[in-house]
Length: 192
Image (cartoon, rainbow, N blue to C red; front, side, top):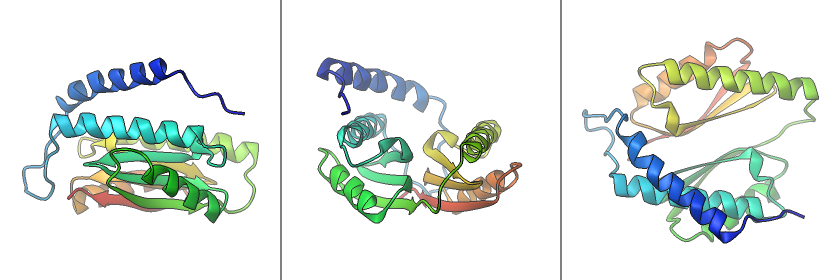
């Protein structure tokens, strides 16, 4: 049985997100080419609250293994990515997400797990995920805070929102350049 955190704990977490998001927006590079419409600080806060609510709802659902589900929100559109054991789990994740207040649309980018994963694979995948995230953080072209990275058996899944097709392709190239990556799957979307 999963114990849900007390409401005051959830409220404190959402308040912390609300304080962090404006600070992180100060360092964000905004695309001035007109390809992506910038998001206001108010929208970023709203999206952070929606993301937190969706993660809490998925965590509270007995059927969804929320630790394998990545959640990114932009202007009320929630992107779900990561890996699920079966199609019913994906369907349940979408249903739970749609039931969260503030969710305007759900973009499903989840993939089905294939075969059993060994302990060695899990450790290797953790190292690969960390290396990809580190490379994204160090890369001047990437706004890596909006890209989620999941790895399963050496296959890296990138999801989230990017400013342009150029940035999307660059993210794929950065991930492909990491040792141990067998394939890179694009689940990213260009911001509208």
